[in-house]
Image (cartoon, rainbow, N blue to C red; front, side, top):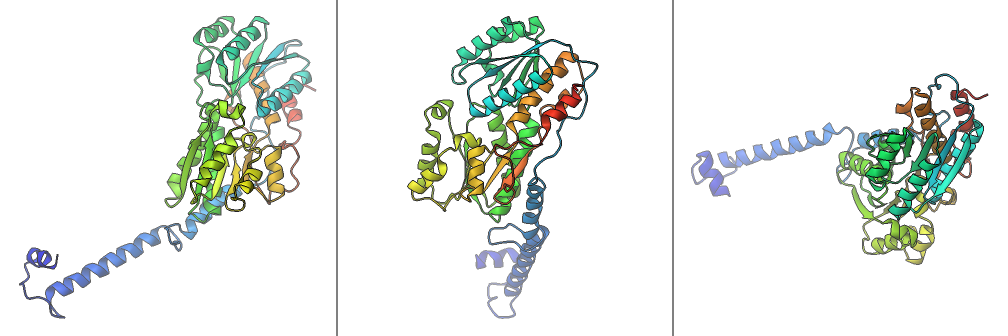
Amino acid sequence: MDKELKRASGFPADTRGRNSPVRKLKLGIAVTVSALLMAGCATGGGAPDAKGATTAELAAVKAVADAHVAAPTTLSQSIPLKGTLPAHGKIIYLNSGLPATTLMVDAAHKAVDGIGWTFEELAYQGSNPATLRSALLTALAKGPNAVLISGDPVSAYGEDVIQQYKDAGIPLIVGSVCPLQPVGSIIQGALGCDAEAAAGKTLADWFIADSKGVGQVLFENIPAIPSLEAFVKSFKQEVSDKCAACGVQILESTLTQVSANQVVPTVVNTLRSKPDINYVFFDNAQFSKGITAALKAAGLNGQVKIGGRSMDQGAQGGLMDGSQVAWTAFSYPVAGYSQVDAALRAITHSDGLDKVSLLPFQLVTQESVKGTSVPYNYPTGALEQYLKLWGVK
């Protein structure tokens, strides 16, 4: 390489002395490269760690996470309904049987009772599209003012079912689905893409800060539930944008694995084969049941930090006893109220449907979990706040 450099520079062949032009040129290049590298590090702000994260970058993501550690006190919805609600009406909620959905259904029942309308619940199996379509048609035949559903993609409904709802003019409120195309009489319900993206980004910022910019996480995800996939995508994108030394590995699960209680065993087996991973997150806490005991049995207790999306009562207990580290949390009852809010706005042609998909959320850690309600339910007095917006005394 020295000979090539000499020829390219036009220097004579015998240039090996201390004061030779080639030696001076080499020293100049070395000094310039060193200066550029130092300048590159400085542009990140603060002192970088061994893998490139800087103090300023870590402080920035920590500030985002810290902004959400307090429990929310107000609803995202703030617009009153137009006019007065009809004295009578009927709302039907389809229940897949998942614990989170059942909490939403129960809350919606309370909300409908609060306005003096009739409420009915119909069951179906999320892993069986035929039962879903059957439940949708059964609900429609009962002549409701609106039908509510959470979690299952519109593609599973069937085009003929969607057309029948459109022809009947019955609002079909679809929550926990993202993205959602509002075709026919389909209306965006609680927990749309914007809500999932905000919470996923916040958890990612916490993860970057907690791991000092070098964390490796295994993220369990059920892509069959679109809202869960949206959260995980937001998390992964934020980590990719802000932490080059971090790693996110997605472990896809199926609804069949959920039904067979195989999610946690699959996660543990994956962790055994990947000793570099030091965090494991779940896209819904209800799928993490038994993870602490399973990690201990596998000899991984204390080596992997546990957290994720949608803290349930079990995860809340894990934070309280120190076995788990961080979960995003929103109130499933508030989600149920919000589903009813969407239905009433559709029925009364009121403004505010664009606010339905957003729900206030909290980043719950071992510190911020102290004093939280069990099960988690914030903002407190949410139903009363909704009833006021609906004009119910």
